[in-house]
Image 1 (tube, helix red, strand yellow):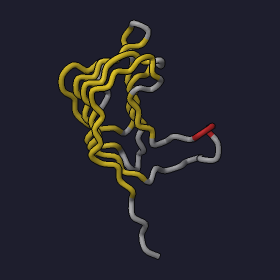
Image 2 (cartoon, one colour):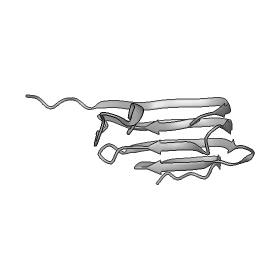
Image 3 (cartoon, helix red, strand yellow):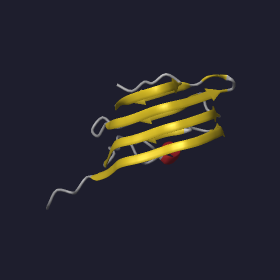
Amino acid sequence: MGKSKQRVVKGVLFQHAVMTNVQNPIVIDQNYCPDHKNCPGQVSGVKISDVSYQDIQGTSATQVAVKFDCSKTSPCQGIRLENVKLSYKNRAAEASCSNAGGTTAGVIQPSSCLY
């Protein structure tokens, strides 16, 4: 049997978006499991890299407005945040990162958690 080819998501750009009370305005979740059933110990078969978020602003309906939950076996790489400004109920929102690396430029709110 031949080795299966890894699926790739690369070179994606999200830009000039205004969020109004949106749940999870910026999210990559490689550990997504609908209803938290039938996916114990799942491993993402998708390699995510070079995803950019530029000029994203507005309000989040969730306290965590920026969430990058990437897999240990295929960490997200090359994530770029540029001029992102999101708030939660007129307060600072939060960012959550797991196995996600990248860079930032300009104003970033909430503060970046990328390594």
